[in-house]
Length: 175
Image (cartoon, rainbow, N blue to C red; front, side, top):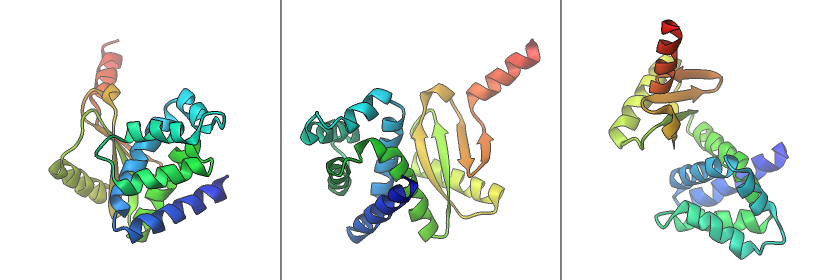
């Protein structure tokens, strides 16, 4: 399946780039992929061929929201039509990796309790680039469970500045 994921990601990247929306599509697919990956029931529904494709596409369109790029919606429809709706997570991960690699960057997945604005993203990108010595592209996943702060992962390296981890460490010290 890995080879197919790479092929689908490369195809989606070419289509999105041709429309001038590679970064936006990659971000939207990545967020959608995280949602799909977090729900066994959703993955099962998306791979259930007894459910009409139009209904499965409608579910994903609802998850993407009204502000999603028409290009993203068309690509998601194509994936569902090809029977790959439940594989959106791995395909999106690979798409993000390929897009960053084409720009000479490494990908940092950043988990934050809240959406980051452009200034915050820029400062975080700069800090991670300095810390790793690499040119970094970030993808942000909103994760309220970390309470505050951020957790960033670049390859195998994790930078944990979350409030949740700080509270856990304080709790350990007090025990």
